[in-house]
Length: 331
Image (cartoon, rainbow, N blue to C red; front, side):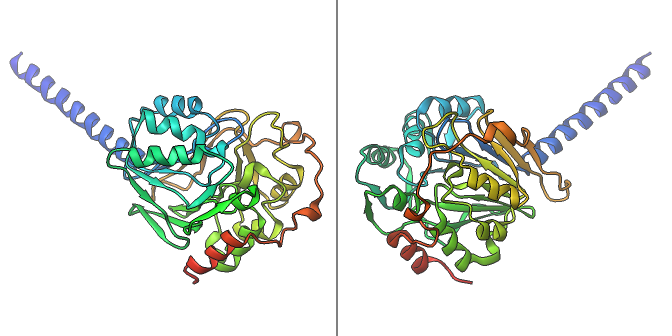
């Protein structure tokens, strides 16, 4: 009887050890993947990234604090290794104020573009300066951000020289644009950059723009996502962060038509937060995205009419374009 009991204990211990090992490997596998969340914050942008090394990053915070705060709390976030403001427009920076007051922030990435018609961007920057132990970084185009040794994070656009702006289009074109690359797949995060910056990035980075996933610029504005740019990027998935019944008519039909013609499946945040996973190497190449492609009535609302000649695609905003040319590492 004693021998049977001992054998039973040994077998039980073996099963427990095997279970523990499996749990360790499962946890390691989950950590080895890259997760991206395109958070439903209404008419604005907020993107949360989880890296294989266990660190995280938040890019923009949407037009108000509560949606991004609730999302981060639901993920169990207590600190953010990196917070980025792509450009100083309120639909990108307002939510970040709540982030700085509610969470520990280790690094703040910013441009030197100042929206002279707003005070909120300066308020946010003061919060970043007051955050204990928080470094403030102004990344230059062409530089690589050392966030994870297995992930390439490249800066494709930014304004690193101080510039004051009244014009919304110029401010959009100072957007911090990033390309995150892992396990054979790129995620191109465009902020609100428009066609002049797309054209400049094509000349400078060439095939380095190719990406499986495209976070569509400027909420699907007609002034971004040109045919030539999409031909260079070749996205399989296009994700649009946009609010229901917004006054801008985003996403515009022209941009949607170009995305469809490029062969991209279109997803939006209208139905909720979208998430995608790039698995670890040797774990298969299945690309996981939470949600269904959205076509038809959901994205076919009529946009306000504009005179296209007022904003030709080939026009350039001097500050953003000149800095991109001067700072980028041409290869």
